[in-house]
Image (cartoon, rainbow, N blue to C red; front, side, top):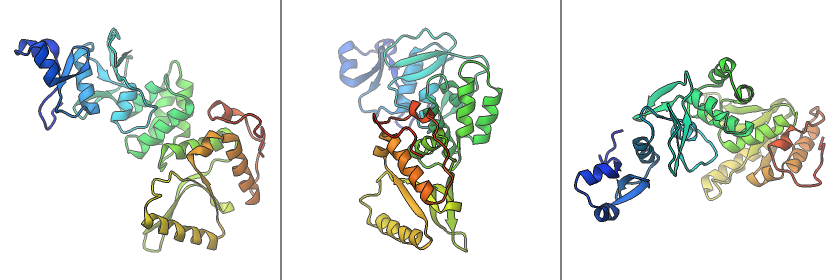
Amino acid sequence: MTRPDGTPPVRRADAMAAGHTDGRLRRSHLALFRGVHIERAVPVTLGVRIEAALLVVTPGSHVSHHTAATLWGGIVPDHPDIHVSSPRNRTRRDGITAHRRKEGQEVVGFRGFRVTSPVQTFLDLAHCLTLVDLVVLGDSLVKRRRTTPEQLVSATLRHRGPYSRLARRAAALVRAGVDSAMETRMRLLIVLAGLPEPEVDHRVHDHDGTLLRRYDLSYLPYRLIIEYDGRQHAESEEQWLTDLARDETLDDEQIRRLVVVSRHLLDAGNTLARITRAMRRAGMPVPRLRDEWRRHFPARPGDLAVPA
């Protein structure tokens, strides 16, 4: 990989062969992995760490799993290691996780690296992630225009082997237009409880096509919207004024806006109770809830088993 500073990571053996001593190497370089160093002035980015890892893993290895997802701009649970897939997963180094390369694994070039394609990365991570985290990954890859829901569904229908059923189910739940991981989680709480799936990313435009507002999740026939508020704009006066105008418009149109924040998803039972109450008040039919949501979201002891 070519970088602007032109200073790649270096193996200790190569540095010593070029005239460095142990003391000089320690003073001028930072150890990224055992036996691989980088000049201290170089920012240690993900790309630098990948370069360093590829110097010490089995030749022919490529970037995969969590690291590939992050490189593509996908959202996955944080993992400190660099993940690679190798012809033989014999690498045993702190900070590197090596997986055995699968037959037919799709590998492409991206940012100077050989890396599993976005769709392949999704399939590979079905072995590692929960249903909810896998849908979060799929939604985020679609948001970054790395793939589409249709491409993920098509790939999972052809996929065979362990966790293929999980991959198929997750792909079927991936949607375009999702703005954040918390929006995905909020939608899945609703769906896994057996409630009707809301429309995602409904957009309202004026007569000349200018976007006026968007709704995260909506049941517009019943004039109900559900939105996640991350409060990232809490200090923005302009955003605050926009929100006030939007709320007045919703009031004029008699649309109920139910707001969910991150803390609410840590008390999923009561959040479902809020949602089902809002649904009933809007005149929606509310089915008896399924318990599947409990396997994926935290609930407090003694919460309502069947909020509906």
